[in-house]
Image (cartoon, rainbow, N blue to C red; front, top):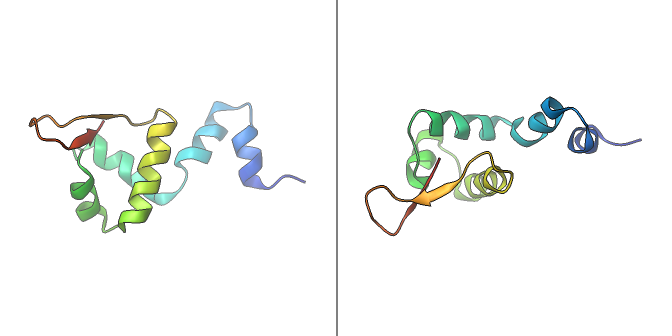
Length: 83
């Protein structure tokens, strides 16, 4: 029998697939911060109190699945922002 994680990832239902991607607490909070205008890695880390490795992993997953995207920083620096 497939685990619930495997079931959600392979489900035909778009809601089930979305829950698989953003169903953990940190991903939801990252998305909330982006909607609230927090777009830089450091600002997200300060806002959430999240370790760098967990934030990096969640952001990579959200970008890889097209939920967030990276853009050049609006202030012209070499950094990028999440939108």
